Length: 292
Image: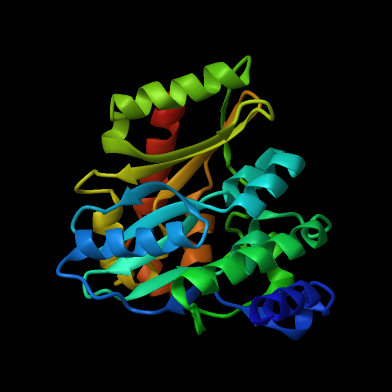
């Protein structure tokens, strides 16, 4: 009954005027007891599996004492399969784990409102509620954190005037068909182009959509550099980065959008300390897509 009420409340928020409330990107969860990060990740993955999630990958970024378990949810996968298109970017559910056992996860409503057009969000509301309920069952999620963004602003979010939104600069390369696009991404990640490596892959071949998460392993430009520069490891559930495919088109979210969405309280001074990050990450995505 408790989970059913949570679903009703979350779904009901879809009917509240969006200007009336704000969302934050992450949810805190119960800490796990473990001897080291690898053991902590395994313990969290076990909890998620027991609650009905399907693990698809683990990510331990270089030089960051934290990692991520990536899972899928059956209700969310069914909704994405039905809707298709760029909704595939929502498929990975990222759960962050610190070396000391601290656990957090993405806030499904925050990311869904950011990635789904506002007129399509009502069809996602019940699914978001179901995912929230399953995360609570698995991890005892509670307090949201990470910085307020008005729910009304998320569908067209940008950090400030002149910076990118979801669709800006995101189309990387187009191939004649889905299979060739996916094969190109897979082969380039196997080659570790641009010092990248694959973390997970989620695809619906019949719908011609896929999302692939990748590690940024470059010592000078990868996540181990820029996340530490902004002291951002408490937002580890933002990682890994993703590239996604719709039909024959390969997309990658531009970092001035994707990083700001994941760390919405960053000041301009902090952004300036990672000024190389957006273009460096964009080059990695282009390498993976075979655009260069």
